[in-house]
Length: 157
Image (cartoon, rainbow, N blue to C red; front, side, top):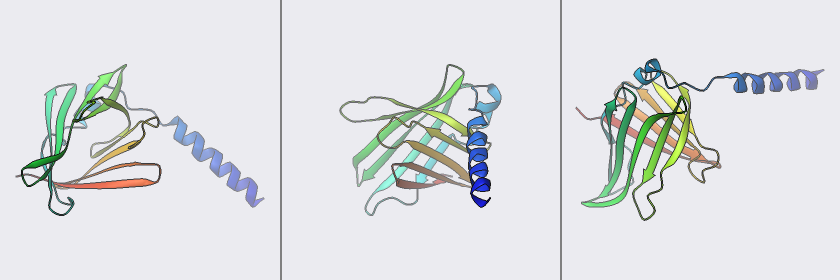
């Protein structure tokens, strides 16, 4: 009996997860991202480094930004990204600035007024990117294959 209940609960949770709709690229959903533009200073960088993420609204249906990590005056990592509409869905497109500069698209699978999640299960790492607004702080994380790297930011005044 317990096994039947557990199996039923598991199947219900899988069905519920599958039934959740992917956010569409509507003006209302782009408005949910209005908290993102600005300058965000990283508060948990590796020792000896600093980090900053900057987002700006390019149009009613496009946000763009960049992230940089500095060790003194030397850039140790940089990335640019956009949130765009494609096939009536929202995508977070990231391009690491180095030799290949190949953009990687992540489908935004969850979106509220204070957070969003984007995923690309075929990508090596990360497979998931999360952003959560908490007051004047931005909590972001990249994860996949059992690894997770947090990025904590505070909005620059």
